[in-house]
Amino acid sequence: MIRINLLGQARPKAAKQAVPLEATVQILFAAVAVGLAVVILGITYYQQKRQLDDVNKHIAALRAEKASLQQIKQDVDRFESQKAVLQQRIDVIETLQRNRSGAQDLLQMVANTVVRIDALWLTSLDRKGDSIELQGVAGSISAVANFITELKRSGYFDQVEIKTAKENDLQPGVETYGFTMSVAIAAPSAGQPKTQAVGAPQTPPQPAAKGRS
Image (cartoon, rainbow, N blue to C red):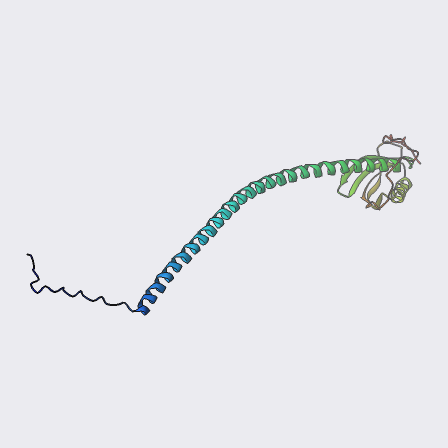
């Protein structure tokens, strides 16, 4: 439908309502505040994400280092076990070597002592820890007594204990005495010289001829 202005006058325009300046300023500040908040949140998020990535990388590196250290620990434990086995073998060998050397010195000293006594010889020697059990035959009781004196004088033995000493009848008409004794091996002192034969052969002496001393 067409409207015609019969009056010939211009229609007044509607007046625009003015927006208060204070409201405009508030809206502007709100927009700026929102923008700043968005920027700050973005920066904070980026920084925290970067820190989180660094932490994750550090955790991954620590896990890799832990796995490497665990492998090294397993290798060390295996080497320690092998070392313990080898050390045990070495200790056994050294113990056998010391016992062998000690047994040689012991036999040498006993031989050196026996060879100084006339009409006396040993028939048995049995070592039990730090003591030895001796059995032998002598031509007289004085020979047995001299043997005891020489054992104590050697410095290699002490605490000589006679168990039995009695006449036997190994050979009719010949006076002989069988004896058994226990002799403790003296503890070696510092600087004690090694046992050496003094005017005696290196092999055990042969039994002396039976007869009266």
